[in-house]
Length: 89
Image (cartoon, rainbow, N blue to C red):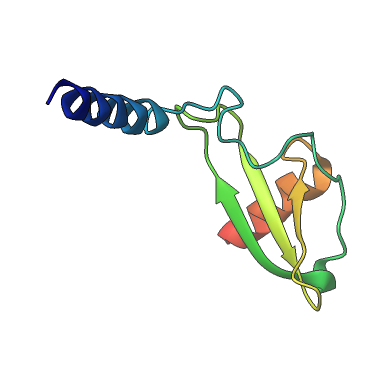
């Protein structure tokens, strides 16, 4: 009886501890500043991730045509600022 209760308690603690894993990295998708320029004709899709509690950075993720490779665009670059301004029009 005691061994069954002990095994059950150990399993519950193991499940509880495993479910509480916390990443110290944050949830930012862009690990560096990103590229400053991409030819507009190569861009398939643009996504903007605004600052949030999990990532304090503005992230602009550009998906390229053909290979579908996502790239981070530097939000401080001249190209990104003008691209966003033109997209809002």
